[in-house]
Length: 367
Image (cartoon, rainbow, N blue to C red; front, top):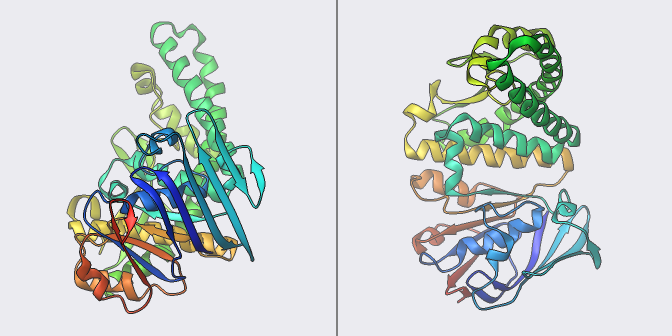
């Protein structure tokens, strides 16, 4: 999958811009606040997801203008395709191959891309919810049944937590808690086992990429951590069953009732990321943590390729900072047969690119 042409109007600080990127590496460089990340954000919207910066679409309209318009020509699913997006405070129009779409979600799976931004360091440095969100987002894109199970799980979780709060002050309906446990166990088992299968594939792809980044000097390991109690986790690599989860819920019932919340289940598990057998969150350098997060995102892209037959477009925002020259060189010159967009500030980075295209951005324009 690759972009052949991008046209942008009135998007953030970009008044009007058009680029015809290379099928390989594309470097977008310039000083800070010139529009480099804005360009990646514009591309990302065609994936069907919201802005990776958390912005509302109406906030993306250039100041003083009434709308933004973006158009993408790309090759995907074996043919040339075209997508347009026009957003104003009053309406939003999405057109795919001349056919109006009812929502951005209709673009899911049509134009695939993955994004890495500095905030994604939270995959390594952040709390467990960041890593669960990463897994859930990837699986929801690839497996509709996972999306359904996750939605149902969250509904059951809200209801169980509400019931726990009632039990704290009136336990006459305690026997009904078993119903919520049974419902939660069923969905939790499905989510955990799907995550385990995905993590097995991700471990292979991400570890290979990390090895390349580190020049084969370091190894990356991913481990699924099942929560046993408020302060204890256990590494697992085999599927769980409902009896296992139900027993954990039973063992933690008193604490759940006391605090009015469910402390065990798929919403509390974690992924441990290790470099050379040591937790990267606590002991990894900034460069190692950034490399690990990048390997996870590029590993995600490899899995998408395995399932769809096409590598998604990779959007790498400010990926070069805090990486040594060897790691930068791997990104610039050793990622093959893949369309990649990389933003950076230092023009010296561009000089080490053997093949591809470079675009200098200044005040929202290609100069």
